[in-house]
Amino acid sequence: MGKTKKVRKAGRLGSRYGVGIRKRLLKIEDKQQKNYVCPLCGFKKVKRKAAGIFTCGKCHAKFAGGAYLPTTLPGNIIKKTVAQKGFASKGKTLEKMIEESPEEEEKQEEEKSEKKTEKVAK
Image 1 (cartoon, helix red, strand yellow):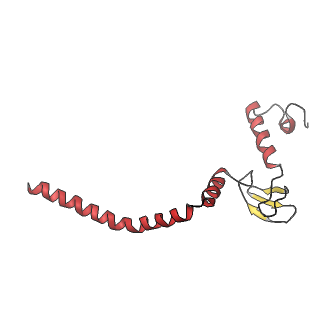
Image 2 (cartoon, rainbow, N blue to C red):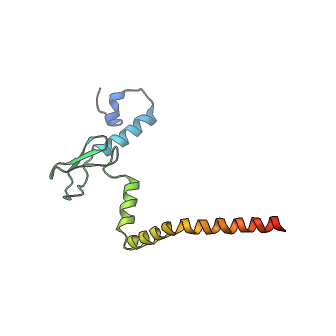
Image 3 (cartoon, rainbow, N blue to C red):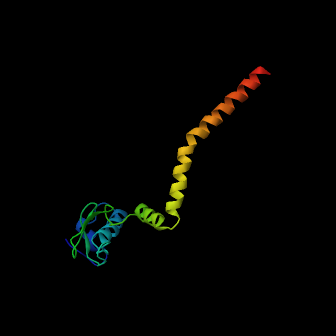
């Protein structure tokens, strides 16, 4: 067997497994065998070597990515978030809030216990 115009690389499976699974297989294999842009040198020479391992044919850089693609959706979201200008300042305020939160929790617990004692006293 081999490639045909309609089923392309999924022709190797014959009529087995159903048309939906064979179509899904085509989408994934097309993505994983495609060349991608290298994040270090910028050339479109990145190929998949194994699941999650990609290498650049030009600069020979080796890096990890998704199982089929060199970048994943969560990874892209994190890159965009970090690249924002105000991210660092927001991170510092978040750290301050985390440091202050145990003290605030203790105060809230004390206020709750005081209210309970007041209700019991009445």
